[in-house]
Image (tube, rainbow, N blue to C red):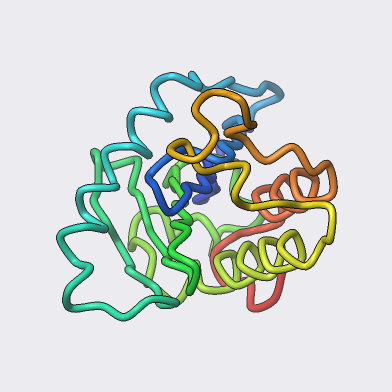
Length: 179
């Protein structure tokens, strides 16, 4: 069995009103197979991180990296970022998510991640979200559960945004500086 390297297990985009706007799951890969992830389980994990955002909010200004929100076990950890508009970006990292391309990359699973390892992924996600907001056909208020009262969409449906989130989740690995 080869050594394993961290990979992104899930990316969550959570609205200002703590409603999920998008959840992307990325399978664990290696040894010739992919292990699918349970969407409900990861939805609960991402939702559990909202309390940590709220607890840290008074001491943090918006638009910053919240770093490690919590480690669920020795394999999974959640990291967070808050945009200027109050949208929360959460990345679940699987420390043994893929087969390591090199022996050096496999050491990261043993040593752990630094907060700066995820900064390129968060910056790319924030850039994708800003591009979404710049789209004249995108109306962010459609995602407000209090304003729509069941008539509006509560999920982001822009294929360009969804494809970019998918690209970011697959392209990230420890040590990458630009995505």
